[in-house]
Image 1 (cartoon, rainbow, N blue to C red):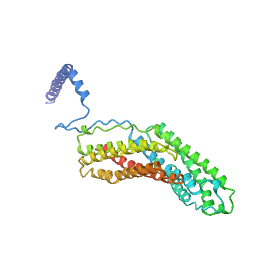
Image 2: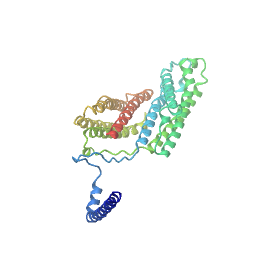
Image 3: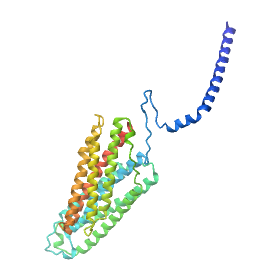
Length: 369
């Protein structure tokens, strides 16, 4: 019995080996015959399909890694917060004090605008310093592009330092004017004026350098091909992502014009034209969103767009248009220019803050679908 079963095992192995050899030969022949069509099919196939022919995975090409995108967005947010507070210092100083040569012991100077601005700057600097140096959000960011991370972080350190120096310079100036000390001693008027100018120039130089560094690594945006996305939820989110991107591009174009805008600028008509373009473009985006189907799973993103982003864009358009028209018509004095300009900047920063919050949530949702 033992020899019989042993022989059967060998015989079965022999048959199996024969079948395998035959199968291999057949496979090779089939590959040779169909090689061209087989390769062509592979080239055309970008996604796997289930038995019903529905796409189960999609190829998504990203020009910027998600970690780099998050890194960039977080530092843009930090930049906007520091700028919103930093730009106000010298402008508030000019509003409160004006021409230092005109200051006398009987001058009515309260320093209220400068005092408020210094407090806001102190809070902004404290927030960003803790975020960067004390285990906060910025300290935990890791970019895939190490060169980008190194340059941005070094430039941000310089901006923080210059902003802190601006704050430290402005503190005694606030006390000097808000507490009425200038009425007893005018000897510091010219000294403080010189120090404020120098600190503001150093801050703005550091700001320009940091802004330039960020622009160097600005992510390349690529519109998603919504029509070829089969999943309705993913399609809805993709539509929103494209809408956010289109809106940001026009907003950035407009804000770049505003960055170099000053009291003597005469290009109001050019900026007003971009505002009109932004408004028309955003109306189209809203129409597209309204015609898109959102399920219970994605309605929250639609509501964020309607209740958050739409309001931020509308407020910015309204305030910027009013500012441009008033300045063009001579309704804004030189002393009030800084305050009105800061109002416009604040609306832009509000938009950026909302944009960053929403875009991160949308990208996360899109990647998980």
